[in-house]
View: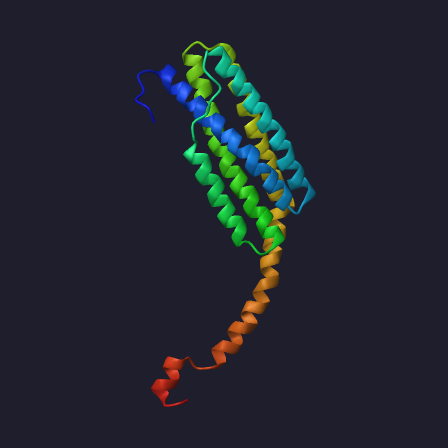
Length: 195
């Protein structure tokens, strides 16, 4: 990060950061929508993609009002959140579990955005940029609504479906474990003289 001399410069740097974060999301959200197995979750990701595009347009208006070129800087936080989510999603074999993981990953992203927009809104207010603060507030509220919608989907049925998928796996694990426990381990056979 550049050496910050003022809150105004810090606001401008954060705006560039979140602009890139939103740009990264426009690439990640269609992939999530495609992988989602429940229509409600697909719809939520598609709706958030549309909102994200609006957020970018709103940020472009903010850049214009501040006399800044529309240019982001790499948002490492978002890049890492997306990479972590992709890794977890790739490890999921069960559809319901994958949906639960996608919701968790998306909510981590939402919380990151909520923190960023809340902070920038506050700074804009302190600096007397009332119209900019209002635009950032609009985006902040939309991010909160998305987070609540994802919570509703998770608590409404996805988490339960993922848990039921685990319960179906558990009897198989117990059966395999029961068979294995009847045989002495190799180390035990060697001690008792059994082969």
